[in-house]
Length: 231
Image (tube, rainbow, N blue to C red; front, top):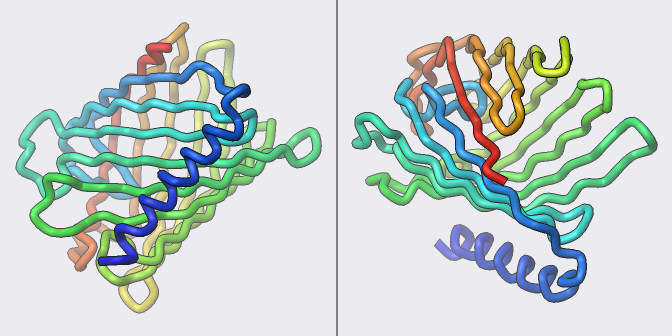
């Protein structure tokens, strides 16, 4: 209990300190709304294929440090264990030479309406190139509060076809030592127009309908999402 409550309090204290130090460098926040036919995390569905509405806000404390929060809710059949999720995060971006960017984030995910404790904290690092290639690794010491370690790795490539159209391919692996190990992939095509982004993707996982103490692994297959950047 102490460990689970300590991490969010530490993040909150760190944000207050950074805000006080860098108050002169604050920028305007951003806010986006997203409607999607599923909620996918580590390659699998968290909502059993039910559509969701998400609101995401971000604030740049400095040119390198970002804080944010996301509220996500299932909009059909809200009796699911993970039908609602509230996540807070802090991230640090660092340019590496002219072509690479390193991004490290600490995310705390809460599931306030769940009947059992799913809350957990995850640390992730992404190395991305200006040509669209990126590599991610993630680690959670208490994945879905199940007293197991969650380790993820992903490689992604995004290619702009025109000013508005793009496609993206992603391969990933997720491992919980001594419990499960599966691979996942997705292929997406997207359209950007002013403040709106529409994306259609197809997802695949190497294991389906596998039930574990961190939930069931379900391949989400096709997914459609519409994102609106309010400001």
